[in-house]
Image (cartoon, rainbow, N blue to C red; front, side):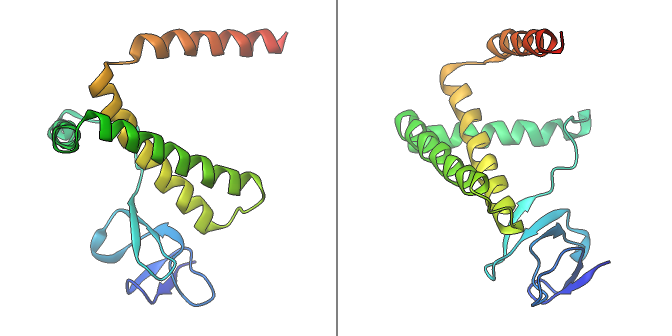
Length: 151
């Protein structure tokens, strides 16, 4: 059941008792976003899928260009420091979740920090190089440990 959002003027699936969006797909003008709102109107992209089509390749190229531009503009050292800062902010939000704050607002904060960390990790991969080989080894090791735990 959708409720009217007084902030964006749209119909939303989740609204608090004041009618403000908390965490929901926003239906205004067909926008595909999650609305995170504590009265400030913060938005984060709706994660619709994990793969991409050839038509979406220009968006991925543009994303990579933006990441490279950020490194050039701010410098490698600064972006490494920002990555550390963003990981600390994600840690802080996860600690709040672990302490029992399971509110929609907390979920929104965790998702926002995950996005920030992912952007910074992608920049670190540009700076230091790809991690695919390391990820493959670690995933195989994880799979092996899971299988050993089933025995």
